[in-house]
Length: 282
Image 1: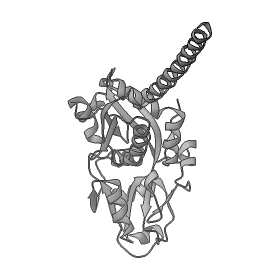
Image 2: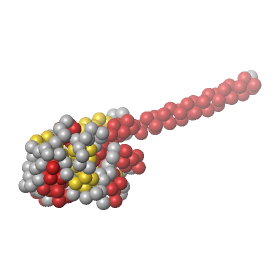
Image 3: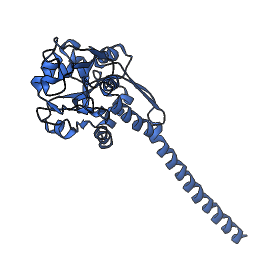
Image 4: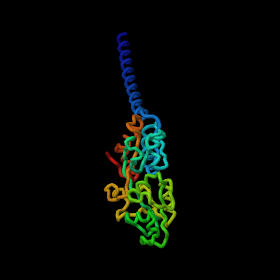
């Protein structure tokens, strides 16, 4: 009888150990799953089309870590950014320029995630490989109207620009000092459309985000400085602007805060860098 009781005790003790172990494993699984379950909800990002690629890359990486989070990225230009945040139609707005005084900068929390060059682009077969900042101003203000004046063929220059609300346009015109005097043959509503228009027109010249330049167009050197991320980082390439995200002042939303924190993490900054933007590591 004593032997039977002893065996029963041993069996119960063994079962207890197994049970505790199993509970521990279950607890561990729940804790691990809780990492991705701890955040849930939706974020809407809107504004600059130049920031669409990098913002989508950041959003996809963040959603991969958080199964219950959905992030949408859209927009029609930097100009809609402040209005969207103020009205609540966006949690975060994207601006490829700094906030203007008329947009009451103190009303928002501002996060510069990186710096992007504004590339001046021409058709890939163009004989023109570089231009001075002064000549660029003359071209886009209508003082220079033929490529022959720049050492190119006898052909009219067709300036392709962005719509008035574009942050790329605002930054370009401010740096080149042609605000209110720029003249365009066409105004496009996105970075992609400008690139497509220039790629299909040997007489065209335009400007786009450096991070969007590919083999379909040629980025001109400005004052003998090539348009590269290295030259943006060093400051030697003068046509550059901030990539800015804004939220309501002192936002308390945990999801918005977590996404901003992710952007400034080493992983987030690597995504920014891989997208061709000079990361703003704090």
